Image (cartoon, rainbow, N blue to C red; front, side, top):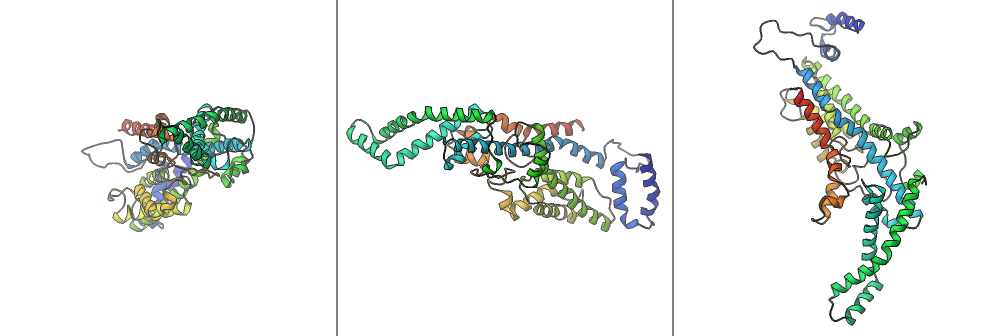
Length: 393
């Protein structure tokens, strides 16, 4: 590192006041202070001495965000791989004539976050319920109910409907569960479904995964981490590049130092975004956040708006189709899956079912292994980050 230090010292006079490149001193200063401790020291006695400066504070915040960044990598890949895996299971059930194409969405929704045994129980319950309701609505079902209601004077029509429903579903429940068990158990032992049958067409990320020999396996830590990183890193790079350009422009024009705060903004903003966000919207959002949310007020320390949240709010209102709804939270798209979020499912479910209607446990919600913004799903990761900030003082 000494040669680099000597090179920077040699270039200093060219960027210092009166130097040939004086106008671009903020660029030199940003590079120097990023690589080394700032050389500015107090020249007279100060009232308060603190080991923390702006650079250390911002770097500490970046370190505190590492757990959330990890979840952005791993959980984004995990959710994508899990969806592909569950869609393959649904295709196996379809090929085995256990379900029909209209029931694929039901199978995918109840498979989220569950083990194979839990999936079998939940799929059986949901499909039996669906078949029972379809039977009651059919001509045969209505005729049966009407006939029994007329012949039984001691029972109401509602009681007869419940009786017919239980008889019909009782006949199909055991057979359906047996078929599900044999099919899903066979699938876990190596029965393969072609990726094209799931409706997922690999883009450059999928092709890169295949070129590295990685499968879309939710049980593989490396596969989840790499696949998720292929979604998060492009967003992060665009944020840092575009945000850094704006910071540099304003610093050069105003003659101010480039503040390390843009490192935090460039890291916070992508954590709040869905994995499907278009990169041009990322560039537009970070531009709005930095320019309108911070620089027009004078830069770091003078702005009353949080640049990252300002950027997120801008995208939310300007491009709601890519920032809200059900189809944006899953990194990949497969046939038959609507992408309903936890809150969306709970909103349409009976009150007494609560979180159980989503198939998500309290631990999954707390740890963050659910669909959502890339780095915002995990309360646990946020707590780890808070501990770092508190510990750093």
